[in-house]
Image (cartoon, rainbow, N blue to C red; front, side):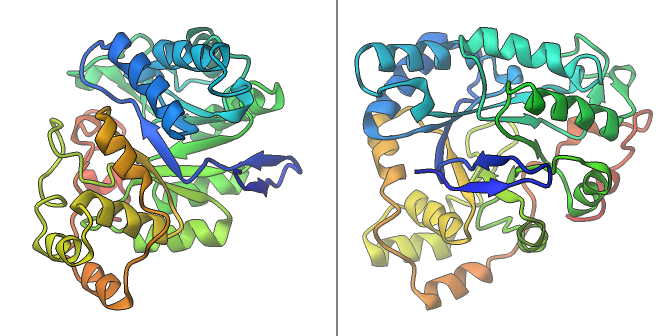
Length: 319
C-alpha cells in the first residue's frame, strides 16, 4: 500500500508505489504499450508513469480499463497514474485544459500525480523537437504552479509535483507555494547519485523519484556508462543478480521511487525482484565512489536566445 504525506495545504496525498513502469517510448506504439501495461498490472506493477509528451496516455487508460473489466484489479483506484504537463502548456491558462485533455486520453476522472515536465516554457503548440530559439519563452514558475494547485483543488490531480528541478528552483517554488510539490522526478543512477538534491528534498518532505536508473542506454541522449560499469558488474556477479537489479536495488535503498522502462516480460519480472535482498555496506561504499556525471543534460532547452543560455543556468550550477 502506498504511503501518504501531508502537504502544507492540510490535504494528505498518496505517494507513488516505490517501483513504477515508465512509458516514454520512441515513436507511436499504442498497441505494444497497452499490452505491456496490461501484463505489468498482471505481474504486480501498480505505478505507471506517462506524460502528454510521450503520447502514451491513451494505451495506459485502455490497459487499466481492461484490467478492471477482466478482474485483474478491482478498480482504477488500485493504480497510481502519473502524467506531466508539457513545456508548451506551461502557461497559467493552459495547465488545466492540458490536464483535462490528459484525463480524456486516459479515460479517467483523476491522476494520482501531475507534474511539471521541465522548468521550461515554450510557445503553445510546440510539442516535437527540434526546437528553435524562437520556441522558448520565460518560465513563469509562480503562475504555472498556481494553475497546478488549482488542478489539485479541483480533485483532478490527487497530488502535484515537478520534474528536473534543482535545489535552487525548489527553493524558489517553496517560497510561494500554497501546496508544496509532493514529488521531484529527476535522473538518478549510480553514475549520477544526486546526494545533495536528495538531502534537500528529504529535509523539505519532497519524495525523490528516479528516472533513467539504468542510464537510459539505447536512447538518443542516454549512456552505456551505468550498465557497462565494472564495479556494478563485479557486484552483480558476486550476488548472482543482474547489473540492472543491482542498480535498481541501490536506488531503492536510497529511499527513492524508481521508474523502470522495459516491456520485455522477463525484465519486467526481474525489475520487481529487488525487494527481498540488499547490498552490503562494502558494496554501497564501492558504488558511492563511482565517478559522477550527469547523463541527461537537457541541451535542447538551452539557447543563447532563450531563458537558459547555458547548462549552468538550466541546472543552477548543480552539475
